Structures are given as structure tokens and as C-alpha cells.
Length: 200
Image (cartoon, rainbow, N blue to C red; front, side, top):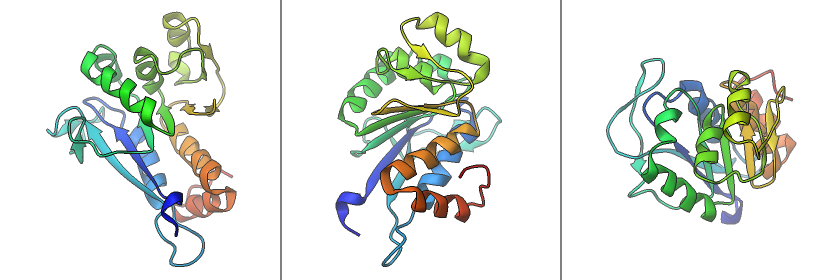
């Protein structure tokens, strides 16, 4: 597999992150393989956090990020999940600066659930069409009235920025991204590999 087809994805994690918001896309991205040759892995994915300490997810599970924002290697795609912890992230100027800086260098930026609030707070969304968890649609519209906030959509692809609705919708968004990058056959094979029947 030619190196230009490979991509690296960084998933931002933080205290009170929603578990499936990051674990769902992580599973999808880490499962993508070429359909020919040696079935090489097409996407490398890792979790990055502000600090290297263990983090407690919204449901109590403890996770350990692979790196911090200070030693994070280059990546092609940034994924920002949601959860209750996004409230603190939206007020963390250091993290917002990092997101803004690294988003400018990334090929694609994605969010899951209320991760869209983080991208908006970092100034990444501008007037981009977006979505978020159904319970937070009104709040996102009120907080960022210039955004075109769409409801009843699993994901919104606005070019460089792809946002998804809540929790399990992040899996759909991730498979859509795989289809966009590598074609529907690769996305279907990935969905089959993780036995995810919802997406087609």
C-alpha cells in the first residue's frame, strides 16, 4: 500500500468524555484495511489529551491517552468527541488554542455529539453546517446563532469538517469518512468486520 493512502487520526480525550463518542470511531478507524495485497492498515489512530494522566470517562471507565498536546505527533485528521466534559474543554484556552492550531494543519476535522461545541468555541466551525446530540440542538443554536445547525441527521459533511449527532452516530460518521476516503467497499468491509449492521 502506497504511503499516500495512509492517514493518521488523533482523537482528543478529556475527563468526562462520553465513552462511545471516542471508542466507536476509534474501533472503526483502527479496523480499516486495504481490500487487496496484504490488507494493510489504512488508518493509524491514537488518543491525545492535555496531560498524560489517566482520564475518567463519563461512565467511570479510566483510560490512558497515548500522548499529550505537547508531544503529539503530526496527524491528518482530528476527531473531537463529546460528553459532559466538553463544558470544561470549551473554557480551556490552552486546549482551544491547540485545537485551532492543529485543525488549521489537518486535512479533515470531525466531531461527535457535543464535540461540535468544542470546535465552535475554538473558532473552527465559522458558519459551517453542523449537527450535535439531539438534546443539545437548541443550545448550540442559541450559543452560536451564525451556525447552520441541522437536526435529525446522523452526520453532516461540510467538506473539511464532518460533525455527527450523539454517541452511536459517531460510528456512522466514522464509516462515512472511511467511505469518503477509501470507497464504499472498504467502508462496508469495515462495518462487516466489526459486525455493525446499522450502516450501509
